[in-house]
Image (cartoon, rainbow, N blue to C red; front, side, top):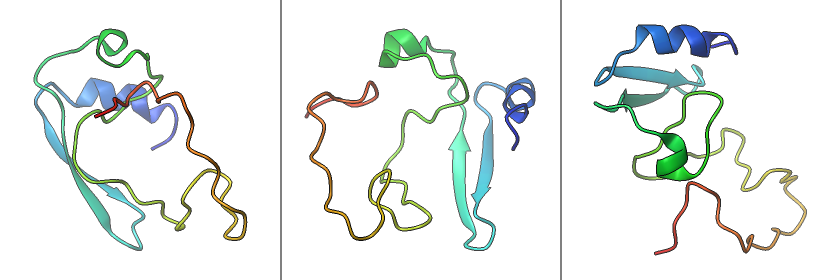
Length: 93
């Protein structure tokens, strides 16, 4: 979906809708997606305002399609230290 496709996506998919999203057609990673049944204020809920649709609830982790473990992973460099500050979507448990 191109960058402008997100605008069209928002007009087509309604609250409570379910759809499948196929990522990497060669590997056939198919995801079941459910649109929330009510609108939320992302700033109140997560502390950020995304510029495109954003998954905010689910289970498991999303693997990187190339096997990378962090941004810039070249397969040889040591893993960087964990950031002290949490991402706006995370909470400590």
